[in-house]
Amino acid sequence: MTDASVKKNEGTPPQPGNAVLAAEKETGVAPKTKKKTHGLKGPWMYVGPTAPGIGVQNRVYTEIPKEAEELSEEVKEVGLLFIPVKDYPMANRMLREGVGYLYDAYCKVGGLKKGDFEA
Image (tube, rainbow, N blue to C red; front, side, top):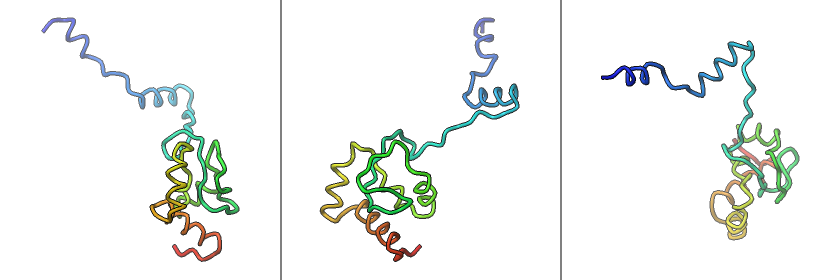
């Protein structure tokens, strides 16, 4: 082994987590991280029934409303009804034909709106 190859392998490569820890140690404050919705960027279209605190049917949102995010932790179907805009033709077909996971979620959230929802 040469000295050059030993020097290359001596240090550990920088890790993203290490940079966050270093910034926290220097400033004493952890950097703020933005909560990602669905793990993807918006815009989001709500394809569920219009319901106060959840959304307006077929409206496009830049971010999912906070009330809907909180409710989606308890009722996962609420989160399913926020879709990327490019998926609207598929969602419209499911709802029109009464099949698929979006139709099931639509019916469940519709029951929630009317007070017929059972957890």
